[in-house]
Length: 164
Image 1 (cartoon, rainbow, N blue to C red):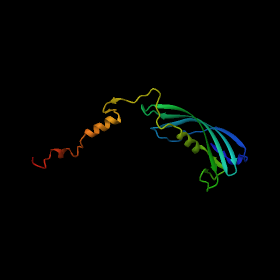
Image 2: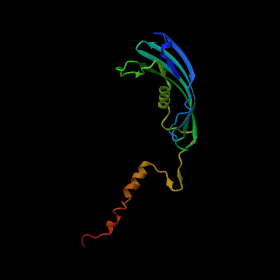
Image 3: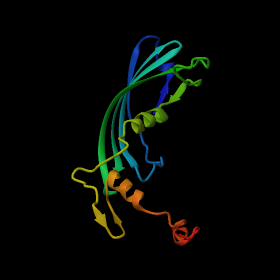
């Protein structure tokens, strides 16, 4: 979604609406597979040096269940805002020197920030045991580790240094 700053009048808000296509973006396949649809409503207000943008984002995200590795569809409704400036010295706002501003990277950043780190499909449960592995809690794990001997030093246990 591109926004032409020259179309805005100083101090007057203008609303734009569009669907943003993220089909060509590559995501981490172990967390987010795709963003099949994303609808954005932008309300932009130009204040000479600052361009204030309110974003209403409705998106569908296909994520991966942390337990079962199955696809999970997430519906996101996000309200956020960003401030853009053309002043390089301003460190509090995003800098854009051009009159035409591509909002896609900002929208994608807001979307990714609102996706949970751990996605769990409804009804999914952690596996308990399987072939070659078992699930235990942290306390039991540390108890077992205390009892284990390091195999690199096990041979030294049979060596007698002193005669009794």
